[in-house]
Length: 353
Image (cartoon, rainbow, N blue to C red):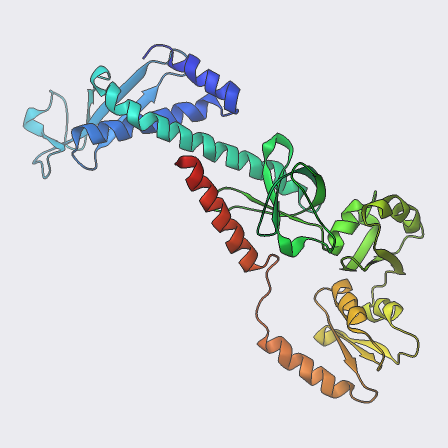
């Protein structure tokens, strides 16, 4: 088959898939084509493509047996001299007669290998960038989910659940967001974006590593906890990206109670941590739902409960019962994953039609 290597190098140049991988795909297709051609079920067939010349060889391998038990074995009496039971007898196949059958199998196999390679390349490129800001152009909006073309025409999605209040996007708008997750899925890597979490605002900072904890109610307030006095200067450069949101800076503390008390209103009573149960109890009657929500976000892995003065023991018991009954939580809502997977499946079916 003249010109095979040249053809594969053209594919490598166009799609970025190594020739070695393409040769392996071609060998796989040739094996499948030969099996389909002789229609004898499971057989041992070897196909090879010379990486330098492009020369193709297909070998039908049989096993020598004293007494054959199936049609694929060669009786010892019929084998060439010197063969013993268990030896392999390799018969070269006329590749010319295989060409038409192979042609039907090669293209789908190459297409599948190219797609698999591109998906792995996308995963390897973007997985290390989780938690950073990425930018792209809005391609479409489907049921509130915004599909965005990133560099190299890689598609990511900003689910409606991860949009901030006031996020309105039109086709070809430039959008920046946090790369929240890169996960392998049946239809290729799923790149999920977010603009609603505290981690998005944190990633906007020139030095996000100096923020040791963060909490957010998108569209209202973001709380950043740091042990650096210079954080205010970094925040000034970020405010233009969240212009309608108040940024509150608090002092980060090892003791979660000492950090949470900074969010509480005046007149709040004692705030203390029950370390053995990873619980912070706030004694007070004026704590708002927003303050409570922010406090819980600042201390992941800790419960935060409000108790009336003298009622801390009852609140602790209630907390322990709730923890025992609570289901495991996932990073991304399973319903979001299901919805995006359904869209990806419909898109792939439309492209194949």
